[in-house]
Length: 265
Image 1 (spheres, rainbow, N blue to C red):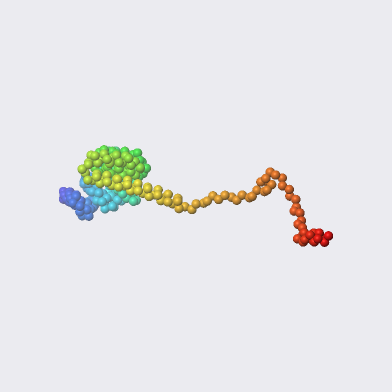
Image 2: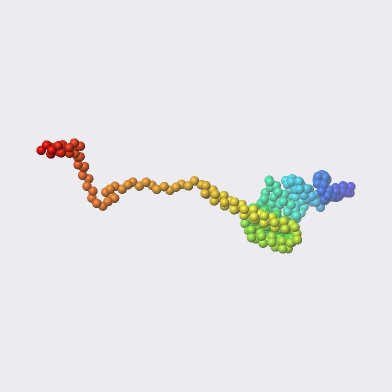
């Protein structure tokens, strides 16, 4: 029995070391071998499952990672970190369930509410699911806990920009710049924010000009007047008009015959 325990301790220690130095494939093989042992001590089994889940998360094998996290949660169901990892595995997977992920984020924060990273990820997911008020509360709390972390501040600024609260985003970033004016990471955030604002203004101006030009080039339908029939003479004048027939004209040779008859007399 002592030989087995020595082997278990050796494998766990080697798995830890390989994971810490970045030899993930080797660490995965050692820990998978360890997980195949029956009747492992509870603490060893728990750590093995969590380390396997972390390695698989890094490799993008989210479904397998969730299986190991489920086993780890059986050992410690009230672990804020395990719930956070489970939420991450659910959210990152295209086949995952965002609502289940949000529930695990919530459980993690109920156990430990002072996790800036968890608060930030939970806030962004809540916003995507339409829970704007809850999402902003979590994101603002994350900034309160880690005001000098540019990634935490960037999450809140991006979220405020996405929902149209540009002024609040600018004030948040300005306050962070005031606290960390010598930090190049915050100067980059400030520059990127202004670049994004300028691009949005240019895009809006371009769309406005395009709409104006499009309206000018549209075919115009002229409103022609309908022809009005000319009024009848009787209607145009109030005088009575006689409608007698025209008298017959004399024949063209009658005047000459009268003149010849006068000379003959």
